[in-house]
Image 1: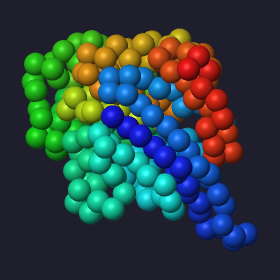
Image 2: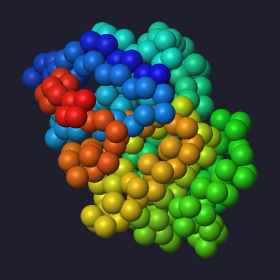
Image 3: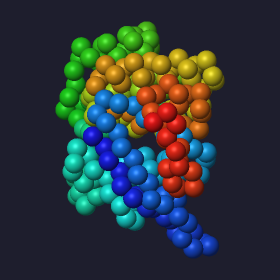
Image 4: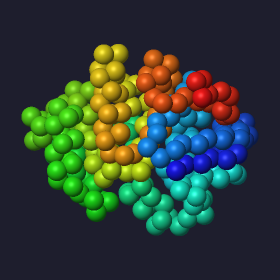
Length: 222
């Protein structure tokens, strides 16, 4: 459902243009999972931002179900972010003025796809039922990340983009949260692209590719 071909992206700096992505090719089938590995500065977050329509590439193409993402209007890109994808970041990005229940429902309400039975199931599976009336500041990091995952999956997006989603958690919490996320992604019928620097986490996904100096260099295990 996702095809990236010869994607290039650079940024202006005081020293001139800084190339970040230098011809990235990537494919993700519907319902599959792919780990995007790479060290800090390799271009993982930049690529995810382009896929989310938060920035535009210098050249190359991003196809969603055969339709180009580049060239869409701001309104169409906003619709893609609202209805087509779920986003999970390392820093949670919960809305501090909303309690857990409202944060969980937020994305689904925006997308016009609030399914209360599915949301209730997500809430139970993520262990959030006793926390629904709490606010983000009253939660641990692991609890906040569970809310962020539930919020992203509530509309059953076609694609989940996760940028170092467990990077702020300890190893045990990280493993538990990732296992839950992958289980719920499969049940939602979503595809997932997970950016991580951790080989330990990457092997949990169906496929893995390595982004180094702006290029995809290998795909261990196919």
